[in-house]
Length: 324
Image (cartoon, rainbow, N blue to C red; front, top):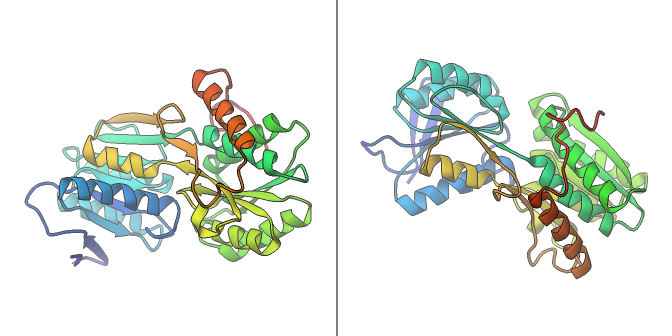
C-alpha cells in the first residue's frame, strides 16, 4: 500500500511499508511516471526490483523543474540509497546533493556526473535509432520519412543523427524531414504540437515518422493513425498504443538501467548500447504484419554489423557528426 509522507512542500510516496534498512529511491522527471515512455520504463525497472526482492522503495514525481533538488535532498535526508534520478535534467541537482551526502549512493540515468558516489548510466541512442531508421526507409513507399524530437537538446539530436544515418544506409536517396517540439521541458508533454508536426511532415510526403519526444509522441502516433501512415515509438515498446500503425519502437532500456542500479550499484559511468542490450528495436504481435521477413533480415544484419564493429554509427555528441 502506498503511504504519502509530507516533507515540506513535497509529498514523497512510499511504494511499500517503511523498512529500517536503506531503501532505494526514484525521482522521476517531467512528464510523470506513467508517460508511456521514458519515466514509465524507469517505473517498470524499480517495480521489477521490488517484485524480486520484496523490499520497498521511495518515489517522487516532480511537477516542475524547481522540485528536482528539493526532492533529491528529502530522499537523502530519509537515508535512501541509492537515490536514482531519471533524466538528464537531474544532473545539476544530483551533483550538488551527492556532495552534501557523500556516504549515500546516487545514480543518474541519461547524463554523466563525475562524483565518487554517483553511478551515471548513458545509452548509445544512435545505435537503436540507426536500426529504426533502416526499418523506416525499408517500409516507406515514398522514400520520405520524418523525425519529431521533443526538447531541442544534444541528447535528442543523437536520436535524430542515428535515425538519419540508418535511413540513408538503407536508402541513399531517402529524404528525411525533422522537427523539434520546443526548447523547454514542456516539449516532452505536448501531444497536440507533436500531432501538428507529424501532419506537416505527412503533407510533404513522409509516410513513416519516428518520435523521440516523450509524451508528445502520443500526438504523433495519433496523427499517423488518422492519416493512414506509420509511426515509430521510443524508449518503451509503444507498438500497442496504435496497433497496425506503429511500425516499431526504438527501445531504450531505462528499465534495465534502473533495475541494475537498485540491484547492484556501481559508481562510475555505465554505457549501454546494442552489444549490452541497452538499446534495440521492438517486434511483437502488434507490428508483426507490418514488418516483412526481408525487412527484419536487413535490420538484424545491420544490428549484427554494429555489434561486430563493421558499421560505425556516428554519435552526434562525440563525433562532430550530423551537424543540423
